[in-house]
Image 1 (cartoon, rainbow, N blue to C red):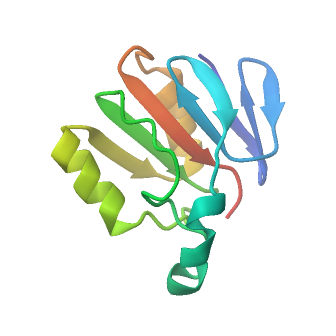
Image 2: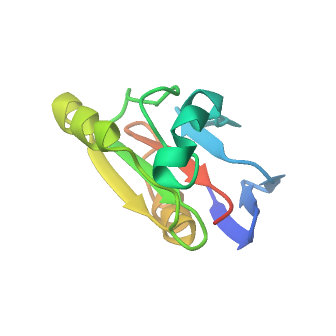
Length: 117
């Protein structure tokens, strides 16, 4: 899978452009369903990645692209749940996450990529 951050708010995955956050699981790309995490926005200053939204836990490694500037908050519960499940959590700015995902084995790697901030 070829993944790259084109610019603020836009990524490209295997030639398809996305202007919204995405979840990559089992080699498939879908929209991140972050609505459930919105009530936490005031606490974090931004809608965080939280356990209130669907997380692709069926993997050994979960790559989280935290945005162009790395500003996406990752709620503490995500870190604890990853440890509990034995999932390696890699939270890095989205450009770096794209590079990691491009060279990853998609049989055991999932990703959540934030395309702004």
